[in-house]
Amino acid sequence: MKILIVDDSDTSRLLLESILRHAGHADIVLAASAQEAFHLLELDNTGAGESPVDAILMDLMMPDMDGIEATRRIKAVGRLRDIPIVMVTVNADHRSLEQAFQAGAIDYITKPVNRIELRVRVHSVLKLKEEIDQRKIRERELMDLAGRLAEVNKRLKEMAIRDELTGLHNRRHFMEHARAEFLRHKRYGSPLSMLMMDADHFKTINDTYGHSVGDLALASLADIGRRQLREVDLFARIGGEEFAILLPETGPEEAMVVAERIRASVEHSCLRVDSPGHVAQPGQGLRFTVSIGLACTNEQLQDVDSLLKLADRALYAAKNSGRNRVEH
Ligand code: GH3
Ligand code: MG
Ligand code: MG
Ligand code: MG
Image (cartoon, rainbow, N blue to C red; front, side, top):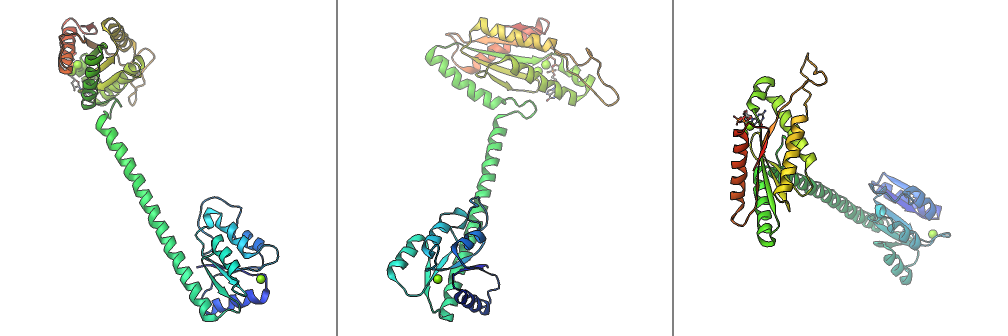
């Protein structure tokens, strides 16, 4: 561990150094003034980091700046705050000592120094510094661990409510949210609409292009839908190629407009499918359509499951009447 000796007297400085070297302390730096000490400690550097020394022996009486003021300034720097400072004083003037302790010194020793006393005091402050360092390491490890746990927790929470392929909400989250919205509708009478959307002949897409291209198509379908919806709408993938959309504060006419807009955007979009050895030409690529069933709340509807059933029935009707259409 590293010790800094600050003393304006050459003899005093060298004596302290020699005693400590004999006691086995090899890493010692010397400063003949407070300014020199500040320079060694890089007092101006207020950033984080390790403390540059592990203990300071500070002469109390020095011409330009005394040890008390020097101690105060060192203790004001966060990076240096934990370095124990031992005052070295000619006569144990109690008034000065009190000020030194107030400034942040942790111990003192009187000149002429007794070798054993110096060794013992330095030993004990270095031990203290070691404990502080170790505590800091443990604290840092705990903080790291807490940070990682929070990160994992966040990811787990996200995973619990999201569908990985499309980034949309999953069925469970959709149902929870829809239940809450339905209660709001019941209480305040605000209209609520639900769309059920299913990709048409999706099995053929998989059979023609392969399952991974089918996955891409589902992800792009999610993107297309998202672009047509508001922040408050809830868009979820509730099955393989089945999606549900909840439109709060939205009546049947408005919901019809939204549904039709989504249906048309899907119909008119074209997914570029580049496979090894074959790059799709402009205009070429994967096209598909969706069918949408629409349902809105009314006085007779008692719960969200009934709303969902209505939307499902409308979807079935859209499929039966030729697909690529919206029914309600
Ligand atoms: P319909 O117009 O009647 O809905 O025809 P369809 O072929 O879409 O209907 P069906 O329910 O018979 O088939 C759904 C297809 O969707 C079959 C299944 O392989 C495919 N599918 C479901 N989930 C996924 C998925 O996550 N990725 C891919 N690539 N395909 C999926
Ligand atoms: Mg002095
Ligand atoms: Mg389908
Ligand atoms: Mg289906």
